[in-house]
Amino acid sequence: MSGYPKKISSNASRLIVPALLVFILCMIIYPKDVFEASKTGVSAWWNIVFPALLPFFISSELLMSYGIVQFMGVLLEPVMRPLFNLPGAGSFVMAVGFSSGFPISASLTARLRKERLCTRYEGERLMCFTNNASPLFMLVAVGVGMFGNPRLGIIIALSHYAANLILGLLLRFYRKNDPEFTPRIERKDNMLRRALMEMRTVAEVNRLPFGKVLGDAITSSVNKLLLIGGFVIVFSVIIRIAILTGLMSLITQALDIITAPTGLSDTTVSALGKGFFEMTLGSKAAAEAVSPLTHKAAATSIILGWSGLSVLAQVAAMISETDLKMKLFVLCRIFHGCTAGLICTFMLNLRPVLTWLAKPASVLPASGPAFSWWLSLCLSTRLCLYTLAGWLAAALLVYLLHTFAVIRMRI
Image: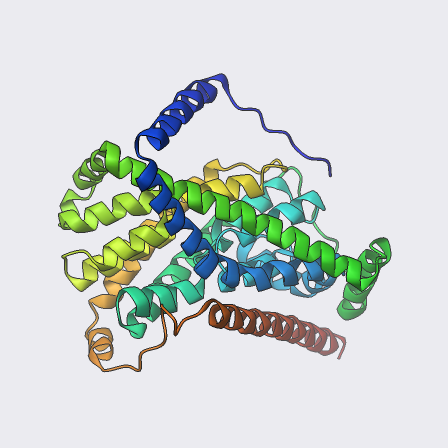
């Protein structure tokens, strides 16, 4: 599939050019602050984003090059289609998206779209509910590093995933009458044999030495991570400039009006303002806010669900060569954030949960020398392997159940 060039409207260009000029002017006026913000962005990218996503990017490129995604897609079609109205190949994106972090599932969805493994509307639905914050980030960086309670990290992660699953189930009704969708003809041949044939076809088309495939996978993965790093650094600078110029204060005042019925404190609303741009800084500010724990945790859940303009820009860059649109994605991020905040608030008002949180817990290394770049990479690699193993086990289980059902029907 050839690329889909996306034109910038004249109205957007009229806004972009003045914004760029103001941004450059602010960089000249506040050089020291811009430099410090850039250092903060580089540190966040190198210590958190890069080691957390590298194993998933490389393994995903390798698996797609050898047709394993098509193999698993055939086996998991009976699960993905009834639940989410998506093709079986979407199960791979879902597995990686729920176990890695932004914006890898958008990158994988774009790859599926380019290879015509999903329709445009299927791709938009898929990337809307498979873009999650990294579980390592929620459990370790947020739960332990920011709140000092690993159990609270579990509550926030559960709220995050539950909200996205609800979103996925609801999205199955979006554009249900897809003109591009062609219903699969029920076939009575062996599902495993058909899956192996799909994988073999892809492998025959991409007849390259393993060293070449691995090199291309590493090159592509690092390039994407450099792109993500650029967005993280730029938005770190934008946040700093927004604070210095008073723009952040205006955003906070607007959010204060919207959140007035919730009774959130000024510091919590200020954290939401930072999270509007970038979720890491917003989550940290929410954890440090002078407010009840329930409000701080709910605000963090909202920020993680929204994901920030930085992630939205990363996703837009990942799908720029396809015909996938961003409008639904942005609306779903708002829904995800609000739903996750409500679920988190509900859970933290349950007496058994409060009792469980009050119990002393062994503290995991979250930051500093103990939580090194290498340790983060090892944990991420282990999680990637567990995800792939679970994904394979689920596909084989579906195949066994399908085979057993066919045998019963024949008997």
